[in-house]
Structure formats: C-alpha cells, structure tokens
Length: 145
Length: 154
Image 1 (cartoon, rainbow over the protein chains, first blue to last red):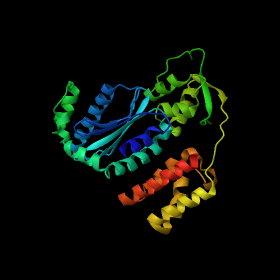
Image 2 (cartoon, rainbow over the protein chains, first blue to last red):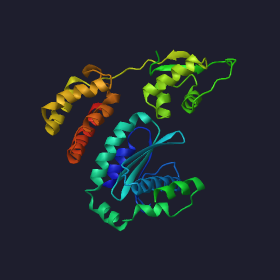
Image 3 (cartoon, chains in turn orange, cyan):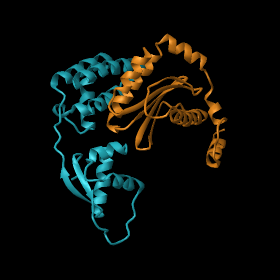
Image 4 (cartoon, chains in turn red, blue):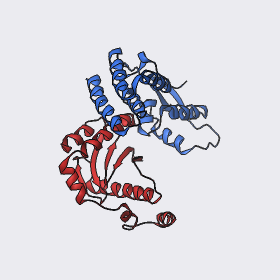
C-alpha cells in the first residue's frame, strides 16, 4: 500500500524524488530517481538535525520547505518519521502539501509500516551528537542545550 | 504592470553607474533569458508571484532588463458544479459557514467564483482545509478533495 501512496506523490508534476525516512535516518521506501541515494541520505541528515534542534527548543517541526540546487525540498514530519520530496516546479507545492498530509495519515494506518516504525524508534537528539559539525553549527547547538 | 506571462531580456549594455542588487534580485536576474515567463521564474526560485512582480519591476526601473514579449496562455477555469461540490463537502465538516469561508478564501486569493483556474484549485483547497480545526476531519476533507482535483485535471 505504501508503494501506491509514494507513487501518488511521484506522479505529481516535476517531482524528482520521494523518500520515507525514520528518525534513525533509515529509509522505508524511496523512488528510483536520478538523485543518488547518498545525496538523499545527506539531505535527510540535515533535516533530522533541523528537527532535533527544534525539539530541543520544545518546538515540533511539521513541515520544512527549502531550496536546493534549483530544486525545492519539502519534508513533512510525523511521529518517528518524515517524507522527503524533491521537486522542481514550486507551483505544485499546495498539491504536494495536501498529498503529504493524506499520505502520512495513510501510512499510519499501514501495519507493515507501523511495525517497521516501531523498530526504528529513536530519539531525535542523537542527530545533534553524531556526525561532523562546523564551528558555527557547534555554537548554535550549544545554545540549544 | 508586470504579469505572470511576460518574458524579459537582459539590457544589452551597462547602465553606466554602480548598482547594488539584493540576493533575490540577483536570483531573478540569473533567470532572465528571453524565454522564461515571470511565472516560471517565480516557480524556479520558489517565490510568490507578488514577490517576483516587485523584483522584476525593480530590475526594470534600474534599467537592467526590458520587456520582450508576452506568452499566450489558455486558462482553464473550474466550473460551477465543482465549486458546488466543494461547498457541499466543506459544509459537512464546518457547517453553513462554509459558503462564507469559500468567499473569504476567494477574496484572499484575489479571485472570483467564475475565475478560479484549475491550476489554483489545490491552493484554494489548502486554504479552505486550514480552517478545519479538527485534524481528522481536515485529513478526510483533503482526501476527498485530492480525488476531486484528479477528476478536474482529467
């Protein structure tokens, strides 16, 4: 069923990649695209850091919209996971946001996904502890704690 | 007045004096190629049309770009039946206030009931659904509306 949900997003005009990623940073499903998997992981890692920083400030990140190399990124967060979409035409952003809301609700009704999500349970703050940070990032993180 | 279907070109020679540009102006100027419409530029840079209009007007005023031509675009509008369907569905979730809300949202988007284009339908639906406070009802409404958007696009 989640393949069908992901396909619905992928069929939206100018969508180049869709991935469902746990807070551990693992991918549940990802569309085959011209964008390398390492790049998706790299973007996911930044988004998880953003979510973790927000959580430190007692704020819940629901939606992130960013620009990336002439493309747009949309990340819809839910409990324990997020859906990442990379697309080119910003005119479809409303349709994408609606579709992502419906997709999140659909995924949370899918047993196999919920089982995977349970295994992937992870605290977000690990993303502020692992990986490499530059001086500016370290300063920003220290202000959060 | 700048509109979304206009196409601009870079001015062939320098304007003579030093000009400072904001990062957004730089962004827009890199997209000006005599081919892309204002709407496409806005889309590429994730700017709203209004923001793009302002930047284009400013670049024009500085003499850095000039109007070249306008692209004819056939706009398809949502018919009365579809709008009635949206109103009926929304009424199920928020009651008779739905009709007023629809008028409010159309005004917010600078549109009228007979000038709601198919392209702007998702934006219209999204703004309407933001007014449904119950999260489950909101998702149900959005789910129904996604099917409607697909039907309209066929």
